[in-house]
Image (tube, rainbow, N blue to C red; front, side, top):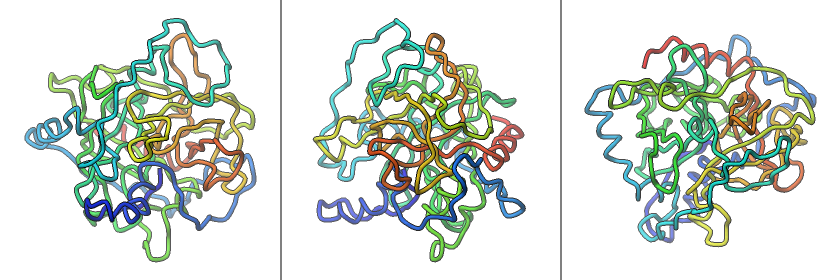
Amino acid sequence: MSPTHGRISSHRSSIRSRTSTRVVLTAVVVAAGLATAAPAGAAPQDGGAGDRVSVHQETVTAAQQQAVQDYWTPTRMKLAGALVPEETPVPADDDTPDDPRPLPANTPDPGATWTHGGAVDASVGRLFFTFSDGYDGSCTATVVTGANRSTVVTAAHCLRGVGAPTAADTWTHNLYFVPGYRNGAKPLGGFSIRTVATSSRWDADPGSTTSADVAVAGYDAGVLVANRSADGRRLADVTGSQRIAFTQPTRGEFVHTFGYPKERLNDPGAKYAGSRMIHCAGPAQPGPKAPLLWGEPCDMSHGASGGPHLAQFDTRTGVGTVVGVTTTTDDLAGGPTGTLYATRLGDSAHRLYSWAQTRPA
């Protein structure tokens, strides 16, 4: 969940190097270098005149869109994020049975496969991408309500690292959003991405600014504009959407979090392999070492980055309001072990969202 790039070779001896670069991107911001702390309860920083929208064009032509569709096979999706995909066993399917009964409201959940259906099953999905050195990764993303019916929110570090926005290796490529992803299947199809945007705070010189600096300062939100489906439908017309808000967080607010953690791909003893969507829920608290980040009790990690933190979530309908996107764990933000922290959406994220509404699918 952190924003660093770089992949190295595919040999087993390179695992340590890859872990120090790529894994932070697909899991959590783990670097040091905290920005100036804001008081607990503060809203995300607005960035002032220095915070602009940085845009990267992804997949536009029909041929480009088809190439992305062809690339993301079921096996490739299942192994996205493996440090040594050539030697990593394809993870077994998660066949946890569905439970049509709604989860009781305000039920704490430190992490479990989501089995209760609802709108969240369609509007949240796994976001796949390829690094500049050719290796694949994945995060989590959410379709949100918007005028163009094609807007997706995720973590900025899933889209890029710190560096010049004109440099190709700053951005991830081959972006592909699979709403409702499940065991390598695409129940609602897959969508290539036309354009992406982050705060210009990510344009900083990587020699003097780390990804963690940008993230803990409140700028780890990113937006994507999806291409239409093969039959010409806009994304939200296929998946539905979640509400979105740009409000000041409240200590103790009950928040539901969703994501596709996948750390078992690289650690056989870990709990999740990215096969199914995982759910957590609990009261939100600011991070002691990163008070602009707010988190809830949750055992998700790598791959959950960008996943929605939903306030006012109705467990009967599966609809809530996205108020943040997963950025890190207690490794960076502090607090109790097993806490998953979000970049809360404020003025900077609102600027990105407003930009996306001007972009046609």
